[in-house]
Image 1: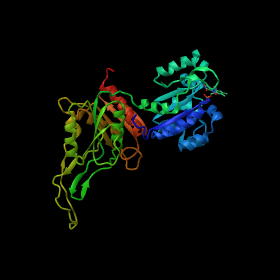
Image 2: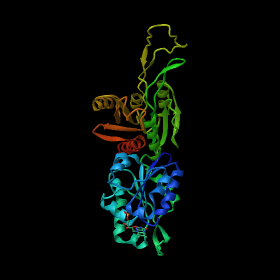
Image 3: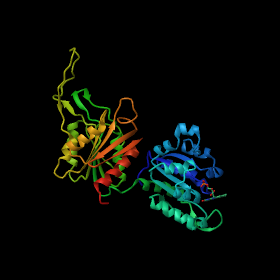
Image 4: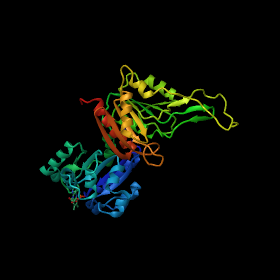
Length: 401
Ligand SMILES: Cc1cc2nc3c(=O)[nH]c(=O)nc-3n(C[C@H](O)[C@H](O)[C@H](O)COP(=O)(O)O)c2cc1C
């Protein structure tokens, strides 16, 4: 099973007898590397104390929708933005009915309505409640909306009856969480991604670079591999961990990055260029350290070849996605790049020195443009943004599926 490292799981616990097993589930998820936040319904709090989940998850437990303090810290919208997926275990007949009806009268149901995150429900109830036409109708409606339904298992129940309705064991639930991310939307495709900054040497001890952290590109690589692609990540100098299952190619200069991209471009279906490649390099790199014995120093720069435009102009060009960091006139500049470089799609974001979006931040806001359309993604964690983007790319690269 692929690691769930750094995945943010919002665990909804509702008022069933199996709520005690959710305490173990928090531990299992944490063992798999997840960061877990628990939302309890009022019913759940009759069965378990929030303190148990707080201690096990290491995070405050969320119980109220209309709580001014919670709203200021992490209210329902913030929680929905924080998470990568929602798992409801146990999911009572009541919670399932609420989700199916789309009501929003408590924190958990409101969260589920206020998000496009993947959701899994893990039903746990008396066998008669499970087989009742009302519950079965509700489950069908949820399945139809792509909500994952895990279980229930069959066997003897806490109420003394025997039948279907037992909650799956915590270990099995934790292992299934991977399914929420492994969409398969890029199955069988080869994807090449560039990430990070480049470094252009001035002399043996100095170089020109930029603020790119590589976080967006690494998150896109992770999302692409989860979507089933074979992924090559050509990166500039960053110290980020390589996502599991991704082939990493380390480069330093723009020229090296271009050479690596040309080498790996054959047979590539999708090329996503997130790297902040230096537009210029030194016309001549100094062989020895430059001494500070002049009042002024002039260095001459020469233009680097544009990696994205080079790959996009190949005879059998992959589906090319560019990134553009702009400080103004986002749409005009982005559309200009899209047409000039013959791209399939361009993702633009506004960069400011002092904001929490763009370079080096953990979250970002994106405006994505293609020939006849555009989509705006509000500020969200780069990991989640990457998954949304991979989904969008998959839909446009293979419009027939
Ligand atoms: C002792 C006891 C055990 C219960 N166990 C379950 C259960 O396993 N599954 C279920 O769907 N409802 C169960 N219920 C009913 C729910 O607690 C009830 O429908 C409640 O409204 C659920 O609230 P919630 O879904 O908002 O947490 C149980 C009730 C009691 C009193």
